[in-house]
Amino acid sequence: DLSDRNSPLSAPDLRLLIDRVESHSLQIRSQVQSYLASHHDDFASLFSLCNDAVLQTVKVSDDLAGVLLLVSERPADVEVREVVEEMKSKSEELKVKRELLGLVGTIVSLNQRLESVKEALKNGKFQFAAEGLKELKIALRIGDEDDREPLVYGLLRKEWSQCFEEL
Image (cartoon, rainbow, N blue to C red; front, side):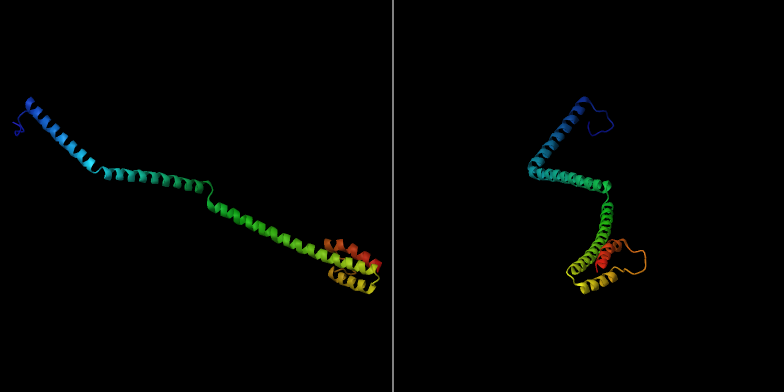
């Protein structure tokens, strides 16, 4: 008797239980197959969506790994600092070059004035040459005393002296 839980089951009873379990199993399997077949498009869409999500996750992971590699290899603040330091260095170089250019311009101007004095002497315009020498003497800060003077003035003094002697 299958309803009595205390009595041992005979072989035919066990066989009957096994048959019932197999029958239920076949019914469940059939229902699952039927359900899967009727919802095939839904499951295909779901699996496709899952596949896309996995691919996007892999892409995000790769992108994140790339960003982490960039950040860990050479931080952006280090590059910014190097660029700022280079800009400061170039600005200083530019300032020095501008000062040198101004100095060269002054030397060229003084040399042109000396050349005009020489030309005036050659042409016999002694008054014009004398006035030019006076102006150059003031511009070059050449005095009668023997003070130390900047190198540029020393370079131009020879030209000035030659003009003065010719006068």
